[in-house]
Amino acid sequence: PDLVMLDEPSAGMSKEETHYAVELIRKITKGKTVVIIEHDMDVVFSLADRITVLHQGTILASGSPSEIRENQAVKDAYLGETEE
Image 1 (cartoon, one colour):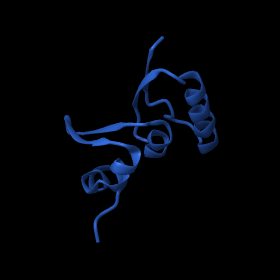
Image 2 (cartoon, rainbow, N blue to C red):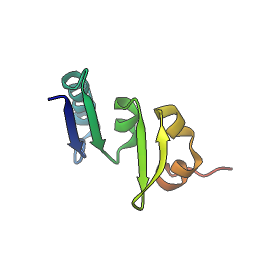
Image 3 (spheres, rainbow, N blue to C red):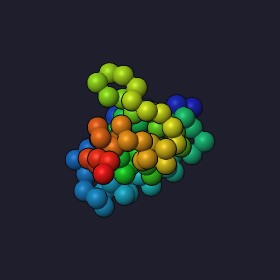
């Protein structure tokens, strides 16, 4: 398929299992469009070229992993960080 959709692919996995799953996902989706719904942001950051973050049914932010990591609204809503 040209499009692969994954819903919480790392749910219930240990860190070791998650690492293996990320490597497998990377291998089997090479050259394909991938849509991932995932709450483990480490998984998202390691797999995605572009991220769209939804919050309460609306788009909170969209951009590269580095842009999302630095976005204060995303930090406040999902990453548990606040501006000091």
